[in-house]
Image (tube, rainbow, N blue to C red; front, side, top):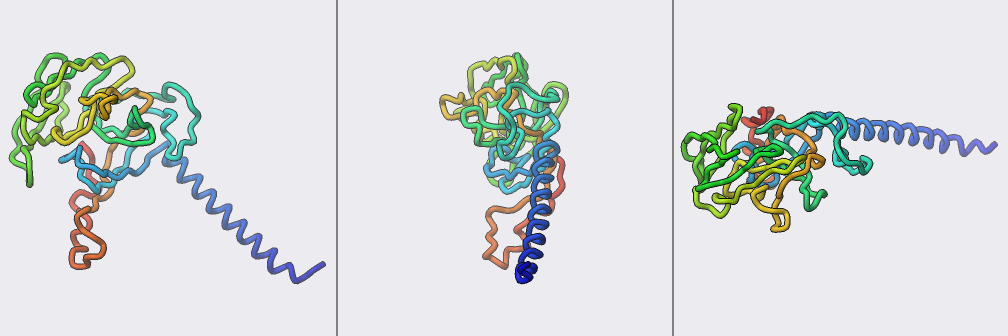
Amino acid sequence: MDRSSTPFRKRLVGWLGQLKSILLALGLVLVVRTVLAEPYRVPTPSMVPTLLVGDELIASKYAYGYSKYSSPIGLMPDFAGRLLGKLPERGDVIVFRLPRDPSTTYVKRLIGLPGDRIQMQDGRLYINGTIVARRAAGPRTGDGQLYIETLPGGREHEIVELSDTDRHDNTPVFVVPAGHYFMMGDNRDNSLDSRIAAEDGGVGFVPEDNLVARADLILLSRNPDVSWLDVTQWPHFLRLSRSLDRIN
């Protein structure tokens, strides 16, 4: 027996043990991110004021059940429908896969349910022929006017309007097909959403299979205007007042 190989064998056994622990940890993380919750970062201002660029979200994967898009790295089998499916509610902020490019993830607010008739007229939202109530909440820091919009059923959320005459403030009537949903951004004049058809580079109607998770919590928020290199601005790098805020 070559005793000189004994230290190497011990090191090999140690490496294999560490590799096993790493794989188990990665497997646990993958299961949690597929079944329970997954973090997402907000890259655009389309959901201002509810979500800001740099917000880090925790989204509940179990809220609507599971589809072929539930795995963060594409490990789910290709199947139609949802396992343990639950219906979303109007007003939910939802993470979903873009219908025309499922490799892209969007986050918007659910406005239209299957069978609903959705229309914008002069900047006002109509659902099934009835105008959706809104009340002014003061000017927003920067551009735009803040409003509080009240959806059918009484659920309220803030929106921003730059004007009521923007290019998507007057639309035809959209009839939401069965098994699909109509999504809009809270930043009404700066959102690529279901008001723009997929063939025109927009979102269009979102199939229920494309729903990934319900955005529930802002874990933390990083100010994208502050650089790590600017030491004097480090105290402003994190927007601590937004940390652990529930998403309305």
